[in-house]
Image (cartoon, rainbow, N blue to C red; front, side):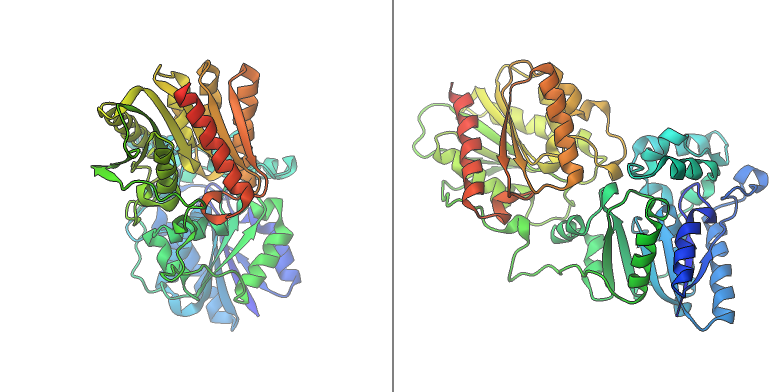
Length: 506
């Protein structure tokens, strides 16, 4: 049998686990929900100034020791959200007592990094830092309608959201600001990740990030690590306690999906060949820009700048400008008599949109200054996570921008991104696009979370009468140019390129 030790997330106490614990108990498991000091309606000594991450690590250690002393059952340690930090800190010191660690819609804590670093929303991080600088020991819990900033509440019934709000406590700032200390003792313990797809996480996303070479994920491709998905928001213990209990029991039994290690014999999806045979010209490389020039071109030619998505880890190799989809489009453009351009920009995290936008703007100006490029006839073509960057160009279209295209774009922050600066809101910017032609290629098999951002944008575009042509790929996935080698996908590429070239040469 199994003894589950459940550690709750930011602002929450053991009460959030009640329904899930009842279901685990009815299945024959032993359950202990940890009462973290100062949370769950308890009092905070000295207004929280004496409570830090080590306090909560000690809370978890006390439960582990008590269970290990009187029970011969295997201990499965479950950390939700912030709770994975004290859970992992405790597991590091009691690795011999723990059978498995379950990361429930949480980050991957690292030695020396505070829990605040895992908070996606920059505004929330700044709020916590301001409170600490002002001498405050506590971060107030969110109001009822502000929980979504900490994780998706889309599937929470009103009663559950009321309950979450009622039991919330101020979070002692020391728990978020004190760095986690790990010796590595728990690094080889079996682990499971439970991903809440309604909060923007999924096994497919993790696999793609691992394929890109993200260092923190490479250790997660081994046999000791398993993953599960739940079709919920960030609080499955409130919105789907039965499904969560079933998943935790499966995790304890060692079930789950394993990520595929990077296989040099079969490249990952983003490195599969482009779906069209476009040999085209060789590249001409300068700094972070590659030009693909039309053969035997006479005089300055129009240009299409292809802007990769992301976030992409800084150490990803090859870098995006060498990915087959981008080089395939650039060579295709060159074969049609225009200059194809690929580039690398620094969108390495969701907090990098400002510097990525600066990289793109600089690259575009350098392309326009090339004597072989017609500076008055340029199109920009965005992909995937570069969607928010389209807002700059729609909000104030320059006269030389003849067309803006986007393939399977993410047009608003995903639930686990936090807030983006208002500068990067395409649904707001499109009202200022005027007569700028827009081309949007939509993948029919897109994830629900990304598809929702596209529909939000298209609704806004329709409301203001923007000139948008939608090209649908009904059976296409995200990144269909390398994963769906079908006539439908090829037709979509031809149609999109034909439309962009028509606007460039009109």
